[in-house]
Image (cartoon, rainbow, N blue to C red; front, side):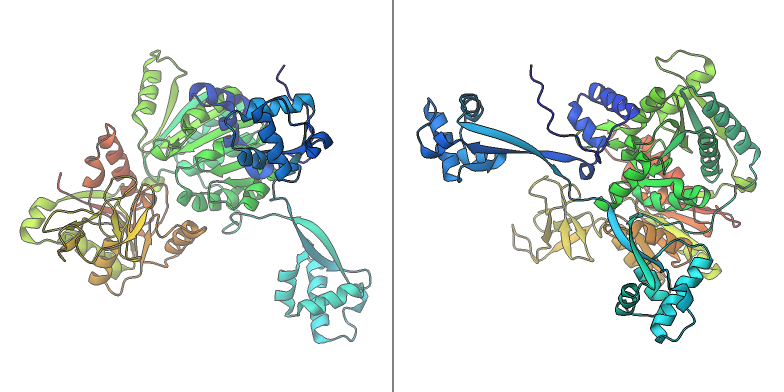
Length: 633
Protein backbone atom coordinates (compact mmCIF):
# COMPACT_ATOMS: atom_id res chain seq x y z
CA UNK A 1 0.00 0.00 0.00
CA UNK A 2 2.93 2.34 0.57
CA UNK A 3 4.85 1.65 -2.64
CA UNK A 4 5.58 4.77 -4.65
CA UNK A 5 5.26 5.17 -8.39
CA UNK A 6 8.37 4.65 -10.52
CA UNK A 7 9.45 8.12 -11.65
CA UNK A 8 12.02 7.20 -14.27
CA UNK A 9 14.60 4.61 -15.22
CA UNK A 10 18.17 5.87 -15.29
CA UNK A 11 20.24 4.12 -17.94
CA UNK A 12 23.62 5.40 -16.70
CA UNK A 13 22.97 4.85 -13.01
CA UNK A 14 24.76 3.07 -10.24
CA UNK A 15 23.83 -0.56 -9.72
CA UNK A 16 24.48 -2.75 -6.71
CA UNK A 17 25.41 -6.33 -7.49
CA UNK A 18 23.96 -9.25 -5.49
CA UNK A 19 27.17 -9.71 -3.45
CA UNK A 20 27.07 -6.08 -2.34
CA UNK A 21 23.37 -6.19 -1.55
CA UNK A 22 23.70 -9.31 0.60
CA UNK A 23 26.68 -7.73 2.38
CA UNK A 24 24.83 -4.52 3.27
CA UNK A 25 21.75 -6.46 4.38
CA UNK A 26 23.97 -8.45 6.76
CA UNK A 27 25.64 -5.21 7.86
CA UNK A 28 22.29 -3.54 8.65
CA UNK A 29 21.23 -6.55 10.72
CA UNK A 30 24.56 -7.18 12.48
CA UNK A 31 25.44 -3.56 13.31
CA UNK A 32 21.84 -2.43 13.93
CA UNK A 33 21.75 0.37 11.38
CA UNK A 34 19.08 1.17 8.79
CA UNK A 35 19.47 -0.30 5.32
CA UNK A 36 19.82 3.11 3.64
CA UNK A 37 22.83 4.00 5.81
CA UNK A 38 24.43 0.68 4.89
CA UNK A 39 23.71 1.17 1.18
CA UNK A 40 25.32 4.62 1.30
CA UNK A 41 28.59 2.91 2.26
CA UNK A 42 28.35 0.98 -1.01
CA UNK A 43 26.92 3.56 -3.39
CA UNK A 44 28.91 6.78 -3.81
CA UNK A 45 26.62 9.79 -3.96
CA UNK A 46 28.37 11.05 -7.10
CA UNK A 47 26.86 8.20 -9.14
CA UNK A 48 23.35 8.52 -7.80
CA UNK A 49 20.69 11.14 -8.09
CA UNK A 50 18.02 12.62 -5.91
CA UNK A 51 14.30 13.14 -6.34
CA UNK A 52 13.18 16.76 -6.62
CA UNK A 53 9.51 17.22 -5.68
CA UNK A 54 7.83 20.37 -7.02
CA UNK A 55 4.57 21.60 -5.44
CA UNK A 56 2.05 23.70 -7.42
CA UNK A 57 -1.23 25.40 -6.55
CA UNK A 58 -4.19 24.72 -8.81
CA UNK A 59 -6.12 27.69 -10.25
CA UNK A 60 -8.64 27.64 -7.39
CA UNK A 61 -5.84 27.87 -4.85
CA UNK A 62 -4.14 30.70 -6.75
CA UNK A 63 -7.39 32.69 -6.90
CA UNK A 64 -7.93 32.12 -3.18
CA UNK A 65 -11.32 30.46 -3.69
CA UNK A 66 -10.05 27.14 -2.27
CA UNK A 67 -8.20 27.44 1.03
CA UNK A 68 -8.90 23.91 2.25
CA UNK A 69 -11.11 23.10 5.21
CA UNK A 70 -8.86 23.93 8.19
CA UNK A 71 -6.61 26.68 9.44
CA UNK A 72 -3.36 24.63 8.82
CA UNK A 73 -4.49 23.93 5.25
CA UNK A 74 -5.27 27.58 4.65
CA UNK A 75 -1.83 28.48 6.04
CA UNK A 76 -0.15 26.15 3.52
CA UNK A 77 -2.17 27.58 0.61
CA UNK A 78 -1.31 31.17 1.58
CA UNK A 79 2.35 30.26 2.03
CA UNK A 80 2.52 28.73 -1.45
CA UNK A 81 0.68 31.72 -2.96
CA UNK A 82 3.34 33.96 -1.40
CA UNK A 83 6.00 31.82 -3.08
CA UNK A 84 4.38 32.42 -6.49
CA UNK A 85 2.24 29.29 -6.56
CA UNK A 86 5.15 26.89 -7.14
CA UNK A 87 8.08 25.74 -4.96
CA UNK A 88 10.33 22.78 -4.22
CA UNK A 89 8.99 20.60 -1.42
CA UNK A 90 11.89 21.29 0.96
CA UNK A 91 11.68 25.08 0.46
CA UNK A 92 7.89 24.97 0.86
CA UNK A 93 8.05 23.00 4.11
CA UNK A 94 10.70 25.33 5.50
CA UNK A 95 8.70 28.45 4.59
CA UNK A 96 5.46 27.04 6.03
CA UNK A 97 7.09 26.12 9.38
CA UNK A 98 3.95 24.25 10.45
CA UNK A 99 4.03 21.49 13.16
CA UNK A 100 1.24 19.52 11.45
CA UNK A 101 2.63 19.99 7.95
CA UNK A 102 2.36 16.37 6.74
CA UNK A 103 -1.33 15.84 7.51
CA UNK A 104 -2.43 19.24 6.14
CA UNK A 105 -0.29 18.74 3.03
CA UNK A 106 -1.72 15.24 2.39
CA UNK A 107 -5.26 16.56 2.75
CA UNK A 108 -4.65 19.35 0.20
CA UNK A 109 -3.18 16.86 -2.26
CA UNK A 110 -6.19 14.59 -1.83
CA UNK A 111 -8.74 17.36 -2.49
CA UNK A 112 -6.73 18.59 -5.51
CA UNK A 113 -5.80 22.03 -4.19
CA UNK A 114 -2.13 21.14 -4.60
CA UNK A 115 -0.33 18.99 -7.17
CA UNK A 116 3.04 17.34 -6.81
CA UNK A 117 5.44 16.38 -9.59
CA UNK A 118 8.77 14.58 -9.24
CA UNK A 119 11.91 14.46 -11.33
CA UNK A 120 15.41 13.11 -10.97
CA UNK A 121 18.33 15.47 -10.46
CA UNK A 122 21.54 13.73 -11.51
CA UNK A 123 24.79 14.21 -9.66
CA UNK A 124 27.07 16.91 -10.98
CA UNK A 125 30.15 14.71 -11.42
CA UNK A 126 30.05 12.76 -14.67
CA UNK A 127 32.53 11.20 -17.01
CA UNK A 128 35.25 13.56 -18.21
CA UNK A 129 35.61 14.04 -21.97
CA UNK A 130 38.84 15.32 -23.50
CA UNK A 131 39.99 16.04 -27.03
CA UNK A 132 42.65 13.81 -28.56
CA UNK A 133 44.53 14.35 -31.81
CA UNK A 134 45.71 12.15 -34.69
CA UNK A 135 47.01 12.87 -38.20
CA UNK A 136 44.18 13.85 -40.53
CA UNK A 137 43.52 12.38 -43.98
CA UNK A 138 45.88 14.84 -45.66
CA UNK A 139 48.33 15.17 -42.79
CA UNK A 140 50.66 12.30 -43.67
CA UNK A 141 51.35 13.59 -47.19
CA UNK A 142 52.20 17.07 -45.88
CA UNK A 143 54.64 16.05 -43.13
CA UNK A 144 57.68 16.89 -45.26
CA UNK A 145 56.19 19.80 -47.26
CA UNK A 146 56.91 23.47 -46.69
CA UNK A 147 55.05 24.69 -43.64
CA UNK A 148 55.84 26.84 -40.64
CA UNK A 149 58.31 25.25 -38.19
CA UNK A 150 55.60 24.86 -35.52
CA UNK A 151 53.14 23.19 -37.92
CA UNK A 152 55.90 20.93 -39.22
CA UNK A 153 56.81 19.94 -35.64
CA UNK A 154 53.18 19.03 -34.76
CA UNK A 155 52.78 16.88 -37.89
CA UNK A 156 56.15 15.18 -37.32
CA UNK A 157 55.29 14.29 -33.69
CA UNK A 158 51.89 12.87 -34.71
CA UNK A 159 53.46 10.87 -37.55
CA UNK A 160 56.10 9.37 -35.26
CA UNK A 161 53.48 8.59 -32.60
CA UNK A 162 51.28 6.85 -35.21
CA UNK A 163 54.20 4.73 -36.44
CA UNK A 164 54.91 3.55 -32.87
CA UNK A 165 51.28 2.43 -32.53
CA UNK A 166 50.48 4.83 -29.72
CA UNK A 167 46.92 5.97 -28.87
CA UNK A 168 45.60 9.42 -29.91
CA UNK A 169 47.50 12.22 -28.17
CA UNK A 170 46.22 14.72 -25.63
CA UNK A 171 46.77 18.38 -26.55
CA UNK A 172 49.02 18.97 -23.53
CA UNK A 173 51.33 16.08 -24.53
CA UNK A 174 51.33 17.02 -28.21
CA UNK A 175 52.15 20.68 -27.60
CA UNK A 176 54.83 19.80 -25.02
CA UNK A 177 56.63 17.44 -27.41
CA UNK A 178 56.33 19.68 -30.47
CA UNK A 179 56.90 23.04 -28.79
CA UNK A 180 53.98 24.46 -30.78
CA UNK A 181 51.18 26.78 -29.63
CA UNK A 182 47.49 25.95 -29.23
CA UNK A 183 46.71 28.36 -32.12
CA UNK A 184 48.96 26.33 -34.42
CA UNK A 185 47.12 23.14 -33.47
CA UNK A 186 43.72 24.77 -34.07
CA UNK A 187 44.91 25.93 -37.50
CA UNK A 188 45.96 22.41 -38.51
CA UNK A 189 42.61 21.04 -37.34
CA UNK A 190 40.76 23.67 -39.38
CA UNK A 191 42.71 22.64 -42.51
CA UNK A 192 41.93 18.96 -41.94
CA UNK A 193 45.59 18.04 -41.53
CA UNK A 194 45.02 17.03 -37.92
CA UNK A 195 41.91 15.19 -36.71
CA UNK A 196 40.42 16.05 -33.29
CA UNK A 197 38.04 13.64 -31.55
CA UNK A 198 36.50 13.47 -28.07
CA UNK A 199 37.17 10.53 -25.79
CA UNK A 200 36.62 9.57 -22.18
CA UNK A 201 39.57 10.40 -19.93
CA UNK A 202 40.37 8.40 -16.84
CA UNK A 203 41.12 10.48 -13.76
CA UNK A 204 43.71 8.10 -12.36
CA UNK A 205 44.38 8.44 -8.60
CA UNK A 206 47.86 6.97 -8.92
CA UNK A 207 50.04 6.06 -11.83
CA UNK A 208 52.38 3.14 -12.14
CA UNK A 209 55.69 3.89 -10.45
CA UNK A 210 57.76 1.91 -12.94
CA UNK A 211 57.84 -0.91 -15.49
CA UNK A 212 56.05 -4.23 -15.07
CA UNK A 213 57.69 -6.62 -12.61
CA UNK A 214 58.18 -10.37 -12.47
CA UNK A 215 57.61 -12.64 -9.47
CA UNK A 216 60.85 -13.50 -7.62
CA UNK A 217 61.81 -16.99 -6.47
CA UNK A 218 59.92 -17.98 -3.33
CA UNK A 219 61.46 -19.00 -0.05
CA UNK A 220 60.38 -22.34 1.39
CA UNK A 221 57.93 -20.60 3.73
CA UNK A 222 56.46 -18.48 0.95
CA UNK A 223 56.08 -21.55 -1.28
CA UNK A 224 54.20 -23.55 1.35
CA UNK A 225 51.86 -20.66 2.10
CA UNK A 226 51.27 -19.82 -1.59
CA UNK A 227 50.37 -23.44 -2.43
CA UNK A 228 47.85 -23.67 0.41
CA UNK A 229 46.24 -20.37 -0.58
CA UNK A 230 46.17 -21.36 -4.27
CA UNK A 231 44.32 -24.59 -3.43
CA UNK A 232 41.80 -22.64 -1.36
CA UNK A 233 41.21 -20.01 -4.07
CA UNK A 234 40.79 -22.61 -6.82
CA UNK A 235 38.60 -24.76 -4.55
CA UNK A 236 35.90 -22.08 -4.60
CA UNK A 237 34.94 -22.60 -0.97
CA UNK A 238 34.68 -19.88 1.69
CA UNK A 239 37.71 -20.21 3.91
CA UNK A 240 39.63 -17.95 6.32
CA UNK A 241 43.41 -18.16 6.43
CA UNK A 242 45.92 -16.32 8.63
CA UNK A 243 49.26 -15.57 6.97
CA UNK A 244 51.39 -15.20 10.09
CA UNK A 245 54.79 -14.01 8.85
CA UNK A 246 57.47 -11.94 10.54
CA UNK A 247 58.16 -8.48 9.14
CA UNK A 248 59.97 -8.61 5.76
CA UNK A 249 59.11 -12.29 5.28
CA UNK A 250 57.54 -11.53 1.87
CA UNK A 251 53.82 -11.53 2.61
CA UNK A 252 53.10 -9.07 -0.23
CA UNK A 253 54.56 -11.45 -2.81
CA UNK A 254 52.31 -14.21 -1.46
CA UNK A 255 49.33 -11.86 -1.89
CA UNK A 256 50.36 -11.14 -5.50
CA UNK A 257 50.69 -14.85 -6.24
CA UNK A 258 47.25 -15.59 -4.78
CA UNK A 259 45.67 -12.75 -6.77
CA UNK A 260 47.25 -14.14 -9.95
CA UNK A 261 45.51 -17.48 -9.32
CA UNK A 262 42.18 -15.74 -8.63
CA UNK A 263 42.43 -13.79 -11.91
CA UNK A 264 43.39 -16.95 -13.83
CA UNK A 265 40.25 -18.59 -12.45
CA UNK A 266 38.15 -15.69 -13.78
CA UNK A 267 37.55 -14.15 -10.37
CA UNK A 268 38.28 -10.76 -8.75
CA UNK A 269 40.26 -9.70 -5.69
CA UNK A 270 39.96 -7.03 -2.97
CA UNK A 271 43.04 -5.92 -0.99
CA UNK A 272 42.53 -3.87 2.17
CA UNK A 273 45.34 -1.86 3.77
CA UNK A 274 45.02 -0.13 7.15
CA UNK A 275 46.24 3.36 6.23
CA UNK A 276 45.79 5.60 3.20
CA UNK A 277 49.51 6.30 3.65
CA UNK A 278 50.22 2.71 2.58
CA UNK A 279 48.03 2.86 -0.53
CA UNK A 280 50.61 4.57 -2.75
CA UNK A 281 53.33 2.00 -2.03
CA UNK A 282 50.96 -0.97 -2.33
CA UNK A 283 49.44 0.33 -5.57
CA UNK A 284 52.91 0.82 -7.06
CA UNK A 285 53.62 -2.86 -6.38
CA UNK A 286 50.26 -4.12 -7.66
CA UNK A 287 50.22 -1.95 -10.78
CA UNK A 288 53.77 -3.06 -11.50
CA UNK A 289 52.54 -6.66 -11.55
CA UNK A 290 48.99 -6.40 -12.91
CA UNK A 291 48.87 -3.09 -14.81
CA UNK A 292 45.54 -1.46 -15.61
CA UNK A 293 43.54 -4.17 -13.82
CA UNK A 294 44.19 -2.39 -10.49
CA UNK A 295 41.72 0.18 -9.12
CA UNK A 296 42.08 2.32 -5.99
CA UNK A 297 39.41 3.24 -3.43
CA UNK A 298 39.88 5.41 -0.34
CA UNK A 299 38.49 8.60 1.19
CA UNK A 300 41.21 10.88 -0.24
CA UNK A 301 40.05 10.41 -3.85
CA UNK A 302 38.42 13.35 -5.60
CA UNK A 303 34.82 12.80 -6.69
CA UNK A 304 35.92 12.57 -10.32
CA UNK A 305 38.54 9.92 -9.50
CA UNK A 306 36.02 7.95 -7.43
CA UNK A 307 33.52 8.12 -10.31
CA UNK A 308 36.05 6.81 -12.84
CA UNK A 309 37.42 4.05 -10.60
CA UNK A 310 33.89 2.92 -9.73
CA UNK A 311 32.95 2.73 -13.41
CA UNK A 312 36.07 0.72 -14.24
CA UNK A 313 35.19 -1.79 -11.52
CA UNK A 314 31.54 -2.02 -12.59
CA UNK A 315 32.48 -2.58 -16.22
CA UNK A 316 34.99 -5.30 -15.33
CA UNK A 317 38.03 -3.34 -16.54
CA UNK A 318 39.52 -3.37 -13.03
CA UNK A 319 39.35 -6.74 -11.27
CA UNK A 320 41.72 -5.92 -8.41
CA UNK A 321 40.75 -3.26 -5.86
CA UNK A 322 43.25 -1.82 -3.40
CA UNK A 323 42.13 0.54 -0.68
CA UNK A 324 41.37 1.33 2.93
CA UNK A 325 38.42 -0.15 4.84
CA UNK A 326 35.71 1.25 2.52
CA UNK A 327 37.15 -0.82 -0.36
CA UNK A 328 35.38 -3.87 1.10
CA UNK A 329 32.22 -2.47 -0.55
CA UNK A 330 33.84 -2.36 -4.02
CA UNK A 331 31.49 -3.29 -6.91
CA UNK A 332 33.73 -5.99 -8.39
CA UNK A 333 31.91 -9.14 -9.48
CA UNK A 334 32.68 -12.75 -8.53
CA UNK A 335 35.17 -12.05 -5.75
CA UNK A 336 37.53 -14.99 -5.27
CA UNK A 337 40.05 -13.53 -2.81
CA UNK A 338 39.92 -10.86 -0.10
CA UNK A 339 43.21 -9.83 1.50
CA UNK A 340 43.25 -7.89 4.78
CA UNK A 341 46.84 -6.75 5.25
CA UNK A 342 47.94 -5.90 8.82
CA UNK A 343 44.63 -7.40 9.92
CA UNK A 344 45.21 -6.47 13.58
CA UNK A 345 44.95 -2.72 12.93
CA UNK A 346 42.29 -0.73 14.79
CA UNK A 347 41.83 1.51 11.72
CA UNK A 348 39.73 -1.26 10.11
CA UNK A 349 36.94 -0.18 12.47
CA UNK A 350 34.71 2.67 11.33
CA UNK A 351 34.26 4.93 14.33
CA UNK A 352 31.34 7.04 13.11
CA UNK A 353 27.89 5.90 12.02
CA UNK A 354 27.32 3.39 10.60
CA UNK A 355 30.00 1.74 12.69
CA UNK A 356 31.48 -1.46 11.30
CA UNK A 357 34.57 -3.63 11.29
CA UNK A 358 35.97 -4.09 7.77
CA UNK A 359 37.59 -7.35 8.90
CA UNK A 360 34.23 -8.83 9.90
CA UNK A 361 32.56 -7.49 6.74
CA UNK A 362 35.37 -9.11 4.73
CA UNK A 363 34.65 -12.41 6.47
CA UNK A 364 30.96 -12.15 5.59
CA UNK A 365 31.56 -11.07 1.98
CA UNK A 366 33.98 -13.97 1.54
CA UNK A 367 31.32 -16.34 2.87
CA UNK A 368 28.67 -14.96 0.52
CA UNK A 369 31.05 -15.07 -2.47
CA UNK A 370 32.59 -18.49 -1.66
CA UNK A 371 35.94 -16.71 -1.55
CA UNK A 372 39.17 -17.08 0.42
CA UNK A 373 39.73 -14.50 3.14
CA UNK A 374 43.46 -14.03 3.72
CA UNK A 375 44.39 -12.18 6.93
CA UNK A 376 48.03 -11.12 6.96
CA UNK A 377 50.06 -9.88 9.92
CA UNK A 378 53.30 -10.24 11.83
CA UNK A 379 51.34 -9.44 15.01
CA UNK A 380 47.82 -10.90 14.60
CA UNK A 381 44.91 -9.74 16.73
CA UNK A 382 44.42 -12.01 19.74
CA UNK A 383 41.01 -13.11 18.47
CA UNK A 384 42.46 -14.13 15.11
CA UNK A 385 45.37 -15.98 16.70
CA UNK A 386 43.04 -17.77 19.13
CA UNK A 387 40.83 -18.85 16.24
CA UNK A 388 43.83 -20.33 14.44
CA UNK A 389 44.99 -22.08 17.65
CA UNK A 390 41.53 -23.60 18.07
CA UNK A 391 41.56 -24.73 14.45
CA UNK A 392 44.92 -26.43 14.96
CA UNK A 393 43.57 -28.17 18.06
CA UNK A 394 40.31 -29.19 16.40
CA UNK A 395 38.18 -27.25 18.88
CA UNK A 396 34.76 -25.86 18.02
CA UNK A 397 34.69 -22.11 18.54
CA UNK A 398 31.32 -21.11 17.11
CA UNK A 399 32.51 -20.08 13.64
CA UNK A 400 34.52 -21.41 10.72
CA UNK A 401 38.08 -21.98 12.02
CA UNK A 402 41.02 -19.95 10.74
CA UNK A 403 43.82 -21.90 9.07
CA UNK A 404 47.25 -20.58 10.11
CA UNK A 405 50.11 -20.40 7.62
CA UNK A 406 53.44 -19.42 9.18
CA UNK A 407 56.45 -17.70 7.61
CA UNK A 408 58.94 -17.39 10.50
CA UNK A 409 61.95 -16.25 8.46
CA UNK A 410 62.78 -13.10 6.52
CA UNK A 411 63.63 -13.07 2.80
CA UNK A 412 67.13 -14.51 2.15
CA UNK A 413 67.21 -15.48 5.84
CA UNK A 414 68.08 -11.89 6.75
CA UNK A 415 68.24 -11.50 10.53
CA UNK A 416 65.54 -9.71 12.45
CA UNK A 417 66.83 -6.40 13.86
CA UNK A 418 68.54 -6.38 17.21
CA UNK A 419 66.43 -4.58 19.81
CA UNK A 420 67.87 -2.58 22.68
CA UNK A 421 65.75 -1.09 25.45
CA UNK A 422 67.09 2.14 26.97
CA UNK A 423 65.97 2.85 30.55
CA UNK A 424 65.15 6.57 30.60
CA UNK A 425 65.05 6.54 34.40
CA UNK A 426 68.78 5.83 34.48
CA UNK A 427 69.42 8.14 31.53
CA UNK A 428 67.70 11.07 33.28
CA UNK A 429 69.98 10.66 36.29
CA UNK A 430 72.89 11.63 34.02
CA UNK A 431 71.26 14.10 31.60
CA UNK A 432 67.82 15.29 30.57
CA UNK A 433 67.47 15.11 26.79
CA UNK A 434 64.95 13.97 24.21
CA UNK A 435 67.36 11.36 22.85
CA UNK A 436 69.53 9.05 24.91
CA UNK A 437 73.27 9.05 24.23
CA UNK A 438 72.89 5.58 22.72
CA UNK A 439 70.28 6.77 20.20
CA UNK A 440 72.24 9.93 19.34
CA UNK A 441 75.37 7.88 18.62
CA UNK A 442 73.43 5.41 16.48
CA UNK A 443 71.84 8.21 14.43
CA UNK A 444 75.23 9.86 13.87
CA UNK A 445 76.69 6.54 12.71
CA UNK A 446 73.87 6.06 10.16
CA UNK A 447 74.36 9.57 8.78
CA UNK A 448 78.07 8.92 8.38
CA UNK A 449 77.39 5.60 6.60
CA UNK A 450 74.78 7.07 4.22
CA UNK A 451 72.03 4.89 5.72
CA UNK A 452 68.54 5.98 6.80
CA UNK A 453 66.81 6.25 10.16
CA UNK A 454 63.16 6.21 11.23
CA UNK A 455 62.19 7.93 14.50
CA UNK A 456 58.80 6.92 15.86
CA UNK A 457 56.61 8.86 18.28
CA UNK A 458 52.87 8.31 18.23
CA UNK A 459 51.99 11.92 19.03
CA UNK A 460 51.80 14.74 16.54
CA UNK A 461 52.23 18.43 17.25
CA UNK A 462 54.97 20.11 19.26
CA UNK A 463 53.70 19.66 22.84
CA UNK A 464 50.74 17.85 24.38
CA UNK A 465 49.36 20.70 26.47
CA UNK A 466 49.99 24.28 27.63
CA UNK A 467 50.03 24.96 31.37
CA UNK A 468 50.40 27.98 33.66
CA UNK A 469 53.14 27.17 36.18
CA UNK A 470 51.70 29.63 38.73
CA UNK A 471 48.02 28.67 38.97
CA UNK A 472 47.85 25.37 37.04
CA UNK A 473 45.53 26.59 34.25
CA UNK A 474 45.52 24.30 31.18
CA UNK A 475 44.23 25.34 27.75
CA UNK A 476 41.24 23.10 26.92
CA UNK A 477 38.90 22.60 24.00
CA UNK A 478 35.49 24.25 24.60
CA UNK A 479 33.80 21.42 22.64
CA UNK A 480 35.59 18.32 23.93
CA UNK A 481 36.92 19.35 27.37
CA UNK A 482 40.35 17.88 26.54
CA UNK A 483 43.66 19.70 26.59
CA UNK A 484 44.73 21.47 23.40
CA UNK A 485 48.00 20.39 21.76
CA UNK A 486 50.52 23.04 20.73
CA UNK A 487 51.57 23.07 17.05
CA UNK A 488 54.62 25.28 16.61
CA UNK A 489 54.73 25.40 12.79
CA UNK A 490 51.26 27.01 12.77
CA UNK A 491 51.66 28.69 16.19
CA UNK A 492 48.23 27.43 17.24
CA UNK A 493 46.61 25.31 19.91
CA UNK A 494 44.64 22.50 18.31
CA UNK A 495 42.13 19.89 19.50
CA UNK A 496 42.98 16.45 18.09
CA UNK A 497 39.36 15.34 18.40
CA UNK A 498 37.24 18.06 16.74
CA UNK A 499 40.06 20.13 15.13
CA UNK A 500 39.13 23.29 17.08
CA UNK A 501 41.97 25.83 16.84
CA UNK A 502 42.93 28.95 18.74
CA UNK A 503 46.04 31.11 19.19
CA UNK A 504 48.36 30.44 22.12
CA UNK A 505 47.75 33.03 24.87
CA UNK A 506 50.55 35.44 25.77
CA UNK A 507 49.63 35.15 29.43
CA UNK A 508 47.44 33.04 31.70
CA UNK A 509 43.77 34.08 31.31
CA UNK A 510 43.11 33.15 34.97
CA UNK A 511 45.96 34.67 36.97
CA UNK A 512 47.52 36.89 34.24
CA UNK A 513 50.93 35.26 34.82
CA UNK A 514 53.35 35.13 31.92
CA UNK A 515 54.70 31.74 33.07
CA UNK A 516 52.67 29.77 30.50
CA UNK A 517 54.69 26.89 29.09
CA UNK A 518 54.17 23.94 26.74
CA UNK A 519 54.70 20.44 28.19
CA UNK A 520 55.10 17.02 26.59
CA UNK A 521 56.62 16.07 23.25
CA UNK A 522 55.26 15.53 19.75
CA UNK A 523 56.72 14.86 16.31
CA UNK A 524 57.36 18.59 15.69
CA UNK A 525 59.56 18.81 18.79
CA UNK A 526 61.42 15.66 17.72
CA UNK A 527 62.05 17.24 14.32
CA UNK A 528 63.36 20.43 15.95
CA UNK A 529 65.73 18.45 18.18
CA UNK A 530 67.04 16.35 15.27
CA UNK A 531 67.83 19.49 13.26
CA UNK A 532 69.58 21.01 16.29
CA UNK A 533 71.77 17.93 16.79
CA UNK A 534 72.33 17.16 13.10
CA UNK A 535 71.94 20.39 11.10
CA UNK A 536 73.38 18.69 8.00
CA UNK A 537 70.72 15.95 7.99
CA UNK A 538 67.82 15.95 5.55
CA UNK A 539 64.71 15.40 7.70
CA UNK A 540 61.14 14.47 6.69
CA UNK A 541 58.10 14.24 8.93
CA UNK A 542 54.99 12.15 8.31
CA UNK A 543 51.92 12.73 10.47
CA UNK A 544 48.40 14.04 9.96
CA UNK A 545 49.67 17.62 9.75
CA UNK A 546 52.15 17.00 6.92
CA UNK A 547 49.81 14.71 4.97
CA UNK A 548 46.68 16.86 5.02
CA UNK A 549 46.74 17.57 1.30
CA UNK A 550 46.04 15.02 -1.39
CA UNK A 551 49.13 13.18 -2.59
CA UNK A 552 51.28 14.13 0.42
CA UNK A 553 51.45 10.53 1.71
CA UNK A 554 52.71 9.19 -1.62
CA UNK A 555 55.17 12.05 -2.08
CA UNK A 556 56.82 11.60 1.33
CA UNK A 557 57.04 7.80 1.04
CA UNK A 558 58.46 7.84 -2.49
CA UNK A 559 60.90 10.64 -1.71
CA UNK A 560 62.23 8.84 1.38
CA UNK A 561 62.58 5.54 -0.48
CA UNK A 562 64.48 7.33 -3.25
CA UNK A 563 66.94 8.70 -0.67
CA UNK A 564 65.53 12.22 -0.53
CA UNK A 565 65.81 12.30 3.28
CA UNK A 566 68.16 10.79 5.86
CA UNK A 567 65.77 10.70 8.81
CA UNK A 568 61.99 10.13 8.73
CA UNK A 569 60.06 11.17 11.83
CA UNK A 570 56.49 9.93 12.12
CA UNK A 571 53.51 8.67 14.04
CA UNK A 572 52.01 5.20 13.53
CA UNK A 573 51.85 5.99 9.79
CA UNK A 574 55.52 4.96 9.54
CA UNK A 575 55.01 1.74 11.51
CA UNK A 576 52.86 -0.19 9.06
CA UNK A 577 53.86 -2.11 5.98
CA UNK A 578 56.33 0.40 4.51
CA UNK A 579 59.43 -1.06 2.87
CA UNK A 580 62.60 1.05 2.92
CA UNK A 581 65.65 -1.14 2.16
CA UNK A 582 68.17 1.50 3.29
CA UNK A 583 66.66 1.96 6.78
CA UNK A 584 69.00 0.32 9.29
CA UNK A 585 67.98 2.15 12.47
CA UNK A 586 64.58 2.62 14.10
CA UNK A 587 64.40 4.77 17.20
CA UNK A 588 61.29 4.72 19.41
CA UNK A 589 61.44 8.08 21.14
CA UNK A 590 58.92 7.09 23.82
CA UNK A 591 57.36 3.65 24.07
CA UNK A 592 55.18 4.72 27.01
CA UNK A 593 52.59 6.75 25.06
CA UNK A 594 50.40 3.74 24.22
CA UNK A 595 51.10 1.34 27.10
CA UNK A 596 49.44 3.73 29.58
CA UNK A 597 46.30 4.38 27.54
CA UNK A 598 43.04 3.64 29.43
CA UNK A 599 42.19 0.74 27.12
CA UNK A 600 42.08 -2.97 27.89
CA UNK A 601 43.94 -3.54 24.60
CA UNK A 602 46.79 -1.16 25.53
CA UNK A 603 49.36 -3.93 26.12
CA UNK A 604 48.38 -5.82 22.96
CA UNK A 605 48.44 -2.70 20.77
CA UNK A 606 51.76 -1.52 22.23
CA UNK A 607 53.32 -4.88 21.42
CA UNK A 608 51.90 -4.76 17.89
CA UNK A 609 53.01 -1.18 17.29
CA UNK A 610 56.55 -1.67 18.58
CA UNK A 611 56.98 -4.95 16.69
CA UNK A 612 55.69 -3.38 13.48
CA UNK A 613 57.87 -0.27 13.69
CA UNK A 614 60.88 -2.43 14.56
CA UNK A 615 60.18 -4.38 11.38
CA UNK A 616 61.00 -1.33 9.25
CA UNK A 617 64.71 -1.84 10.07
CA UNK A 618 67.10 -4.17 8.27
CA UNK A 619 64.91 -4.99 5.26
CA UNK A 620 67.83 -4.54 2.83
CA UNK A 621 71.34 -5.95 2.70
CA UNK A 622 72.48 -4.21 5.91
CA UNK A 623 71.34 -5.54 9.32
CA UNK A 624 68.90 -3.47 11.35
CA UNK A 625 68.95 -2.08 14.85
CA UNK A 626 66.08 -0.85 17.03
CA UNK A 627 66.49 1.37 20.09
CA UNK A 628 63.43 1.70 22.33
CA UNK A 629 63.43 4.50 24.93
CA UNK A 630 61.08 3.97 27.86
CA UNK A 631 60.43 4.70 31.54
CA UNK A 632 58.92 1.17 31.82
CA UNK A 633 61.72 -1.09 30.58
